[in-house]
Image (cartoon, rainbow, N blue to C red):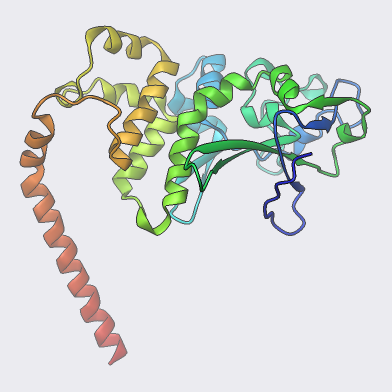
Length: 298
C-alpha cells in the first residue's frame, strides 16, 4: 500500500492512506452478499458534470428537470461554490434509483461515486511540479461486508471493472478547475454571484448552457467555426467539455477559446458605463454601511 497519508475528520470511515493504480484492495460486491443494497440506503452521492449528462440522457429528460427532481444543492467550500448531490427519500437517505431487491435501477449509468465505492477519488496539486495528481482511498463503513470477501484486486483493475475511467477522463478538466480555485486560496478570493451562475450552468445544466451558447451575442464574442458550432449543438458531452474550457477562460483568464478580433474591447466599451455605475453603487453602499456601523458603535 502507498505510504502517503492525509488528514480525515475524526471518526470518518475514510482510511487515511493514498492508493495508486498498482495498489491492491480487498473487496467484492455481488447480488446475494448479506449487505447487498445497504450502501444505496445510506446514500450521500456528490454528482459530477458527466454523471448528470449520463443520468438525464438515461431518463430522457432535460438537465434542468433532472436537477429539479433528482438533486439537492450544497456548498463545496467556504466560498459557497455550488455543488449538487443525488436526492434521497425525504425521511431516509435511500437512493431514489434503488429498485427494491433488484439493486440499482440505473446501474449502467450510475454516478462515478457509486462506481468507485468503496474507494474514493482525490485530486491533489503537486507542490513541486504544479501538476494535478489523482490518488485513491478506501472507505470502510460498518454496513459494508464487501471488505470481508477474499478477493484482492488492484486499483487499476477495479477502476476498469467498474468502467469509471471514462468518467474520470471526461471530468478531468472540471476537477482541475476546482483544484485551481482551492489551491489559489485568498489570492483568488470569493467569486462573484455571476461567476457562480456561470459555474453552475456550465457544470450541471448542459441544456441551459446550450441556450446560452446559442444566444445572439455569444458568437459575436467567441470565434467558433460552423463545424464546431454544429457539433456542440447536438453533442452534450462535447458541449460539457466546451463549458469547462469556457470556465477556465472566464474565471481564471486562461486562453482556451479564441475570441473574435476586437470583440473583448468592444464589449468592455459597451459595458463601461454599467460597470462604472455598479462601482459607484458599491462605494455608496460601503459608505452607508460604515455610517451605520459608526452610529451603532457610538
